[in-house]
Amino acid sequence: MLVELEETVPPVEESLVDASSRPRRIALFVEPSPFA
Image (cartoon, rainbow, N blue to C red):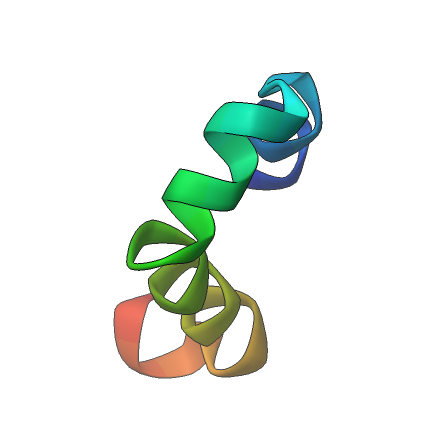
């Protein structure tokens, strides 16, 4: 779902989110085990 939400976010907001939220989301995809 996080991937879909990230795609729905406009380029402008995506760049702002990329500053902090995106790295955290990537961490969830890279290492879903600790979070799951």
